[in-house]
Image (cartoon, rainbow, N blue to C red; front, top):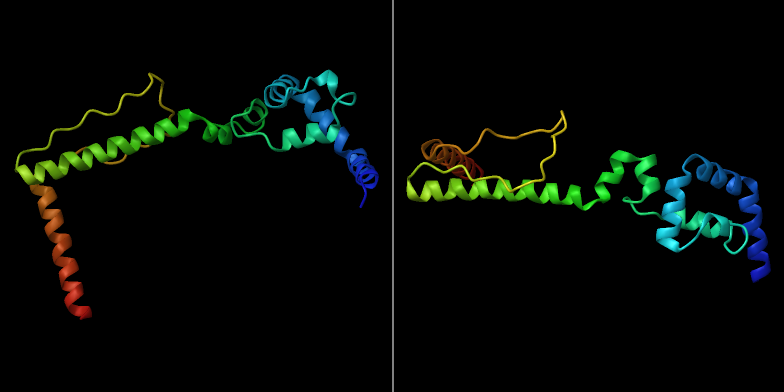
Length: 163
């Protein structure tokens, strides 16, 4: 297929609703589209149809990252996954969990009650209503030892039965 034929096919595809749907998106989400096109590709809305093909605009908008302005408007919950904020919150939760595990292991080894580690500092924001907290803190060393012993006994007895 030569270049002229591919351009004709592209024009037909866009004429069959592509330009109209893109124009609708631009009309409904003008500021977000304008921002994304300029930031991501250096395209101004006035350039569309003159210096920039509609297919180029379509390609840019179809491949926007999760943290783009248009994605934030169209899919606000999904767009949060593209931010460093979400990543940092997950990392802070992992840090807190590892600190609790470490405190419990130290308590078992030393025989002293475990000290509740301080949570990793987070920005001062109100937590959403559906935010879940797991656990109630560190187990006392005696309870943790008993739990480990019970697990060892069960594992040992199941290993003997299978042998």
